[in-house]
Length: 549
Image (cartoon, rainbow, N blue to C red):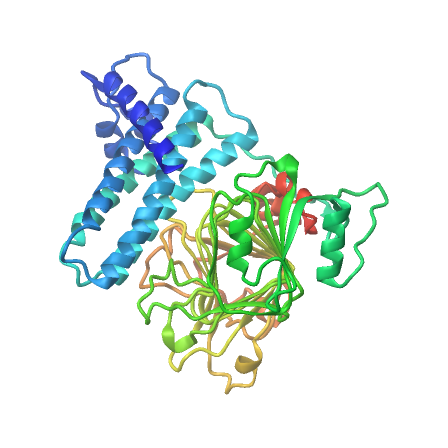
């Protein structure tokens, strides 16, 4: 995959070089709506007086590919340096991986817009905006990792400075794409409820008799029979993971490695059924394992656990017990833990960078930085999330529906923040939407002396965006609701909003002045249908969801 991307990138760069020769800078009218007009004007030469927004948009993507290629090569060179600290090596490896993802996303975007000057379909436009948004998230992750883990590395600025400059160009590319090919969404204020799994029970599956027998034996339950009226979940094959050796594999990693690569949607899901047990392993599901569904025996029955942390030398990005980046991934009835404890600070249980991914009836347990909703589009239904500081964080477009959020007892002197959303650019289609959830203190916090302050969230990045809708808030939530990050950072650019919540912690009369109480029309922007295009991918998963308010 990497070699193909490099070849395509080279061909695009050759085209860019021939077009840009002898050209003049972009006119102010093209650049005025971008976050960095001066970067836009100086970076986008074009030798065509009749050029329009689409021409400049394509040129911006080509220039971004050029910058991303140079940065990827720069990282490769730095990783051969002799003066690297262990922290610098770990941070650079994260940057190396993220740089390759960015090249892939940029190339895909260019191929989609190269020959069209008309608006893309809603689906294609959403896909491209999602990838361009993720590129900015990836570069920000690289920068954060270098600053946090390579502070003593003397050559750090040789990497940070060029990627910060690249970020401005990527921001311009996103703005030009949104202006040239973006579409205005039609929000559904009141949608429908889609029934699928219920209380962790499996929905009707469409599969071979052999797969059906395997699943019924592994799950020790009879599968529901379809009555022909509802949608079935299509299954291509199934393997079983069991620690006692009675299944196909004894580790989850071996089962994931066995799964087919780049499956088509028409083939259905490849199911990895993980029987009850505590699995002490670090699971990483790569991009090529598309349409993989992982089913466990239930919360606290099938448990995947690890203890990597920043204090022990891992980057936050790579401290996760479970990492998934495969599109259309589905997990059901599984607990994922990071047991490092609050004293080890950042220690991720799940890092999710899988587009159009779904977690149903799962539990995520940790303290600081439990659930890393890193990037792209994600859905969580009827899940339990435990943590202390920023325990749901990242820059995905993520919807949590009918989930339980449990703030735990933090270290002495700490406060709890449920969310720390990482949106860095006004053009990104990202944010955290918490709908019809329950927020209550975990047992350790509930039985403490009551001095711990718990906030709904705080602005990690400049355009942080989080909305709570139709959720129950217990007394654990402080009356102010939201916390600052540092001074007045992001208070004028972030978006923190509440709609129609209930419970003693939902009283907005004493909220901070920089948060909002919104109406149903505004809240509809953050529903499953509008925010993550859930109607397009969730029905095939069998997971229940509410499309609107």
